[in-house]
Image (tube, rainbow, N blue to C red; front, side):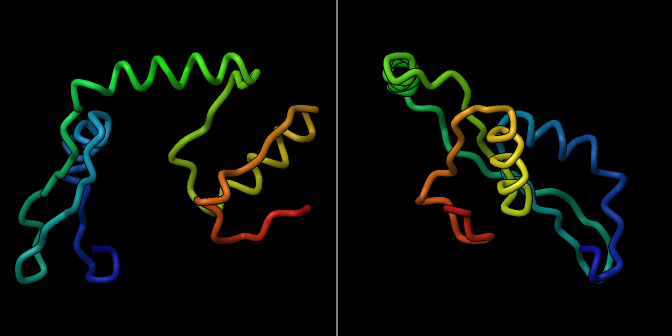
Amino acid sequence: MQQLGVSVESLLPQAEALRGEGASVMHLAVEGQLAGLLAVSDPIKPSTLEALATLKAVAARLGIDEVHGEVKPADKLRLVERLQKEGRAASPSPARCRRPRWPT
């Protein structure tokens, strides 16, 4: 929208509220004017709570006490470096690593 010169400020509160509920939000424009929002999200499955409880139990057994999700690619290296400076073990998920390349 920024490249098109379309301001999204009037719908920012609604967009942030939807993002806070876990939705991916897209702004829509028609003929250079903001026309609305489109929000999409996956339904929460009944098995999700059980899966999360299992993951937390496994993490506890492995000594994992902190997880960072939804970290922007540009921020991942800084996060890992900060945690390592604090003397904490930190590693990005290999499946999520694209760039920057991580030091070995």
